Image (cartoon, one colour):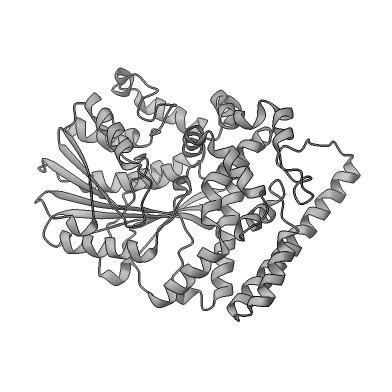
Length: 456
């Protein structure tokens, strides 16, 4: 099996994270490229994905029960996500579309005014505008309505209710989100390809230092390749100060069990950044930041500390740094003021919402909204955007400022990723950037969604 063919297969193919949907004999079969091709076709062919209904079944099984539980105060009674669809005549439909466009334009203008008020430090005016926006939002409305709903703190129980209903089936939603949409798989495939291509044949052991391991969804395919190459592997998860999730032990157990099924000598450990040392082996420093399926973000200052340590250790040993970024990440000099930074974030997440709408069948609308609530909403906050803006102005540096050398992305990896997102047949596109062609970018109609770069 070619390395790229193995990497492009899904990491979480069924309800058990590490239980493969394919028999191990099939994984080693000479026709595995056909399986990979079928998988990539299915990712956009939702009419044939019967299991997709599971993603939102908890929202759709008993409409009457949920209707009785839904908040009924005047602020939410006409906007909850299970409202029945009302058939309309063509003229009514045209009027409805015109009203929706007018509503989106009005919200866009209000959001622009809000950002300008914040930029001028006119807090009272910003609060008045915020209240006007809150009166126009709707969790089942157009893209900007749903986006604006998550931007501001809300005293109403609408957002919290959506979150609580959605989180009941988090694992099912996580699996569905990761497999349906290309964001995480693009980032993981691109980074894993760069890491495995960089590992010299003579090296017996590899250490991967992962900035934010989370559920560990990136590493099953790397474990398989390392087992085939008969190398030992250590995965070190960085223990961050603000990480109280308690997820590490569960992820460690899954990874070890999975590695055991392939006979791989795997060690999984958790260390603080200052405890990581050079073991005279190949080291891969991996950082995934703000990818949608992660549903969480980290401070950029933490990322830069991680990259500085990585650079120091790579001076003494062979290795690579892979960096995936799913947040709006323009350098601050390209955003001269807060309104431009705010607008950049708005465009980024609006494109993300639109790509989810395009890639999800309308009859599973409730499932899509649940996924937006769990995985996209945590990144959308007027408070956190302002904080990032302030931190960015104080610390205007990036990977380029560390003096790292870009490692060129391979043509094979680029070709595989273009096939993954069906470039030319879908609005997704792949672009290679960087001074040394060391960055791969997943775009939606020309707007960057996820960037992955490799450094040495």
